Image (cartoon, rainbow, N blue to C red):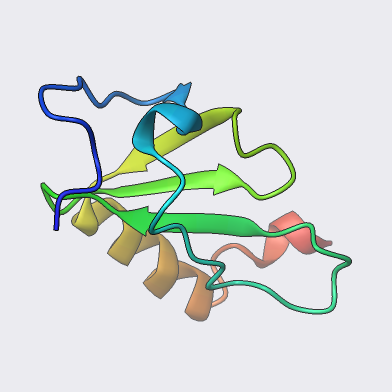
Length: 84
C-alpha cells in the first residue's frame, strides 16, 4: 500500500510530515527515554528515517543498498568510533 500522496517528490531532507504519519516504526527503540529513530519503507523500496522527537522535521532517504551497508557495517563494529 502506497502511504505517500500520489505524485509527491521524495527527496533527502524533505519534511517527514509530507510522507504521512502512518507506517513509521521504531526499529532501534530501547531504554533511551523515547529518543529514537523511526523508519518507514517507501513504495519505491527506499527507506525514510526521521527523529522520533521531531516527527515534522527532515526525513533522510536511503536506498536499500545504503541501509544494508550501514547496518552490516554497524554490526561489524565499523561505527564503534561514534560511541567512544
